[in-house]
Length: 227
Image (cartoon, rainbow, N blue to C red; front, side, top):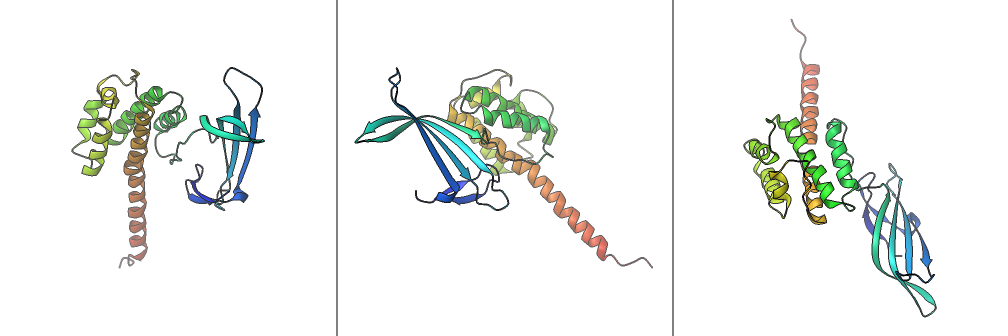
């Protein structure tokens, strides 16, 4: 099997997977049944990053046919991420736990129930706006409007672009606990927006604090003794 590029879901590094880092297995259902011949393919990926080396396990159910004395695995029917069980990224714990919990659960059920995932994302977004910007509680659409003067234009354009797609706009107008139908792509866009805002708001703020703290400490160390 040819080498391929891959993003490790544990360390989030871009790495190259070689044959030595990949283990495949296949179980084929050859018994006559109502659905037809199927193959179940499992895959272990081991991250080559020496600081990680963790494994990822996926499984895929595929159509399958017996041709010319061999099994031919066809179109994928369903896919599962088993370890880790979602594509949630690792964010630092200085982000409030309630926000991280909603984000992780939204990622966990993104494929199983996009509309439930979008509802959790909407609650996560509202929690971030209230915590980070200290806006007056109200409808999510009003809270988003309240932060417009305070966010940079690029961030605002991203929020507006996602908000105007499909049924996402309807989500913003209603109570955050009301479930509104969205498709998987819309649910994924909401999650991507939340990930972007976590970096833009919380992580950038903490990195800035660390840089400024370093400068203050360095300046204090160089300060001449008082006469």
